[in-house]
Length: 213
Image (cartoon, rainbow, N blue to C red; front, side, top):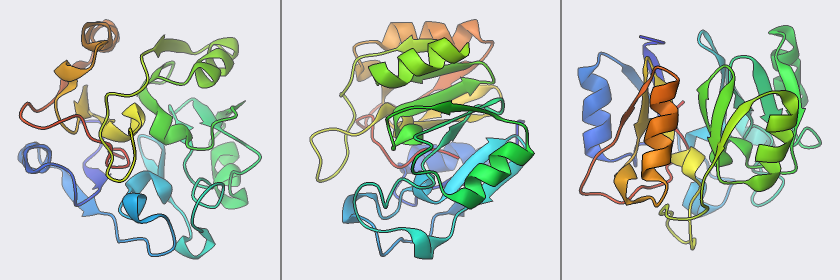
């Protein structure tokens, strides 16, 4: 298994939580964040960043503030090789930590980078954001660009696909039913091309919970 400790929202569907427990994962439920927008107050990716297999960065809750860009200072995406974020807003401590690990910085306009990206492996991602895709392709990353939308998030018209998922061992696990996404077959094929397997749960809409970290 890639790692045993998983950071996740308590609002993840019970099937996902049960699946991770059955795999022997130690689940760390994100403490409620009081100084961000209510709809994302339990979102893991606003405070935790998995920089590589062995390193999870925990941000300072006191530095967060409601709305953009106050909510995005830790919402970076790391593939374990590349560090993708709007570097204008990245918290200095997080940026130092990524530099110490030798991660290659990729600057994008999207501050909600982790929400927008599923890191698949060290060299590949899935995103709906065309600007993110263009910057990452230029940096040498293999990108699957998918349709925006088709993700639930309370109080918003749509959530972000990156916020529905995360890599656990040799699997990309999703919170809800991936098969309802119009690019389902492309997503499954892309993940399997990387030697990984998608895992999702029918009976629930694909829902943004702030990533599986």
